[in-house]
Length: 164
Image (cartoon, rainbow, N blue to C red; front, side):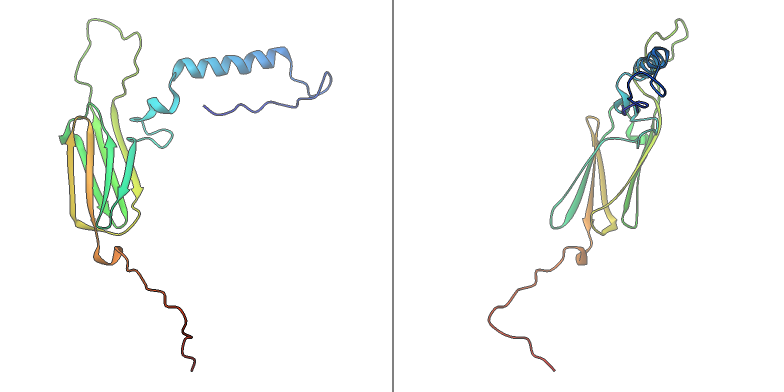
């Protein structure tokens, strides 16, 4: 939830917000809270506020590992794509229960398609990628390219470089 800019904070007189304007701003605040009580947390599957699953990215000398929270999603509905230095995780969470006999009173569980693309911290081999899904967590392991590992350069002391 963002901050609501307050108009001119001068004392009584021209430009001072009226009680009606203040009431209107407070009503907007409560209306937005009642529509989306958890704000960005409930937007994980609807593409707003960055959308997509929550991710953890880590790396070792040889691999980059991405963990994505995807609870309640059928693994067959998940697409993992590596293009250059970008990883895209996309899919769809489908509603499995069809309610025809009653109206929904309150709904926080989100359904629908999602997509999240991140830039990887280093170059990886797109042929050396594996993805595993268990207990609502997707783990994508990407092997770094040989030149991405880097090379340690020794620093010498006490000698001057040769000058032409």
